[in-house]
View 1: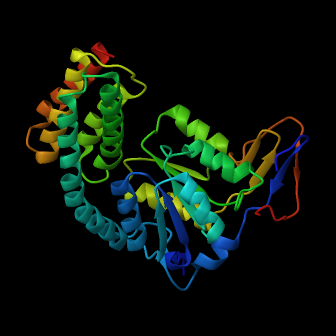
View 2: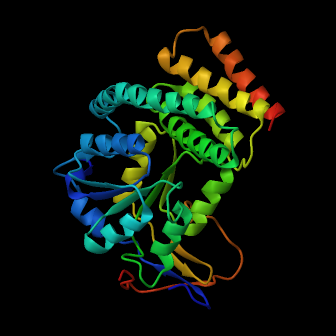
View 3: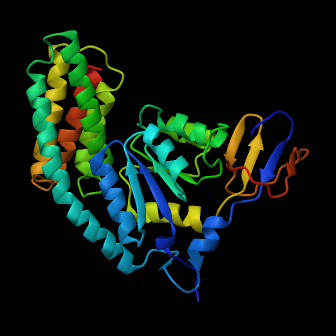
Amino acid sequence: MAGGGRARFINAPQDLKRKAVSYQKGLDLVLTPDLVAGFEAVVNKSRDRFVSSVAPLLARLRSLQAGALASPAATADFLTQVQEISYTIKGLGGTLGYPLATTAAKSLNDFVLHRKGLDAKRADVIRVHVDALYLILADPHASDPGTQHAVIDGLLRVSSKFA
Amino acid sequence: MSAKIDFAQVRFLVVDPHPLSADLLKDVLQMLGAIGVTKCATTERAIELLRQDHFDIVITELETTPMNGFEFVHFIRTSGNSPNRLLPIIMLTARSEREYVAEARDQGITEFLAKPFTMDALYKRLVSVIARPRQFVDASSYFGPDRRRRPEPFAGPDKREAAPNRSISA
């Protein structure tokens, strides 16, 4: 237990190293092409599941958005859902080949984080983010890089304007 | 001949309330050969599991409940009820701004990895935790892995004293 007085060093625990590291069996300490290929296989498997799982979540946001301004409770519930769903997309998109989704979701997550209330304009800011996420997930390579950059730039600017 | 890691020997506990994220991480760990990968959505359940079973590495989100990730790490590192104060903890989170990284480090995480993660980055953290364990520091305001990654020269008096090996885990 940390206490008063001088700091102490405690030798690094070796139990895990002793049981998992050897010269006989296992994976090299540096990434090999086989491991990279294995990772790509996992990502490919997860990518479809990601899109099919996120699409209904975005649909739920659209559904909730219709009544989000009806009462403080509805607003709070909507903002919680937006926060959680955008956080999930932000965290996974880039790993699964959707870096634009991560960027758009980060913009949305930053916009709603710590937000307590909502008005029509700010609800619209959320709506355009959700629309953009739909488009990105439908086809991440549908538009040229210049258009993609313009979309993300637009999201960031509108978020900043109505922050 | 070079050293290797047998991931089948490593038992992981993944704490993440987001099912998609937890599933992806479990799939990646299993691809590496891990057999013992347990998922849970709350820190309350995580603490139960840590008390019931042996785990070698915890990988936790920051956005957890009822404790957030910082509180969870703080509990493991400092509580008298902690199942294992020396447990390696990797924080894997989409909150990757500098202040979160600093706070996670100061709570005693072993490694920090931002989401979205790459295989390369995750693998390096796993190798570091398993093959290059770090000494711990027990100080008045900190208990956790030594936060210094590189030895740096210091001209002042040495205020730290080496302690013999001692069992900290409960």
